[in-house]
Image (cartoon, rainbow, N blue to C red; front, side, top):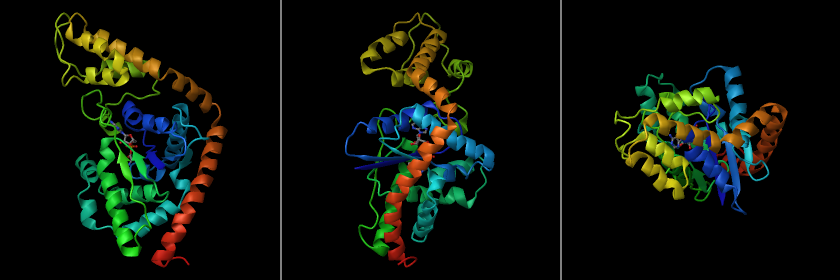
Length: 324
Ligand code: TYM
């Protein structure tokens, strides 16, 4: 089984990225016999970041964060998307069989336009590049959060169109892996946690900033002494995501028995966040002192990704007539 996923280096990693995606990447490393590919999607981030120095810095940062959170270069191929330029070539080959209508139905494109982003071709064609990422290593499974579900459906449609044109079995049709509980992690305002909504709890923010974000979680005005609702309560939803199932009854009681103010419960959440990510935060500090190590991991990852991608690209070029 081949597993692949990626994260855009468009800002600091947040709890939604971790619970929706990166925790799955780390867990996948336990499965002997599988091959895993986790990359930093810097070509994708170019659709929103047009500052070379910043993109370079953010891409290295995501690679550092991957390692700090437990991705192991011995068990996973960790690479930067732009180090595998054939992805852009495959993206073009795929775009020649991708119907416009498929891309026009893209929720993510429509959302970005609705938020005021300029309608550039890169944003529109984003799902084709994402298909190339996945198809170039012949991935079987792609662990992601629910916001990527439609992109995975498009990847499958594009791969089928390519196979129908050039030969069945040329591209492998991947399956998304979306965990029900963490498919959509809420942000501090109750909407989906997202860099672009400014509602994130960042994994590696200084404690002071994290505290400010946690204290800003939107709650209702139930008085301290009264029982608090759990349904539709963002604070409750976040706490549940961070606690083991055996602690769920105690978490629930904090809300239902009354006597616990939201301020107190938020402090409890802050403590849990700091405990959960303490080791990762420490490891990240160490890694930041050794950028050469991180670059070495990316260089080795790129070599290993090339070895897999080169075979697929040879077959695709032969089929399309752009190579022998
Ligand atoms: P990105 O960088 O926006 O997010 C990275 C991963 O985090 C998940 N995620 C969430 N999951 C649950 N709740 C949330 N609030 C939340 N916010 C983010 C995302 O679903 C994603 O899995 N297009 C991708 C990057 C990409 C990619 C790929 C992924 C490029 N090529 C190929 C998989 C395979 C993206 O923008 O993710």
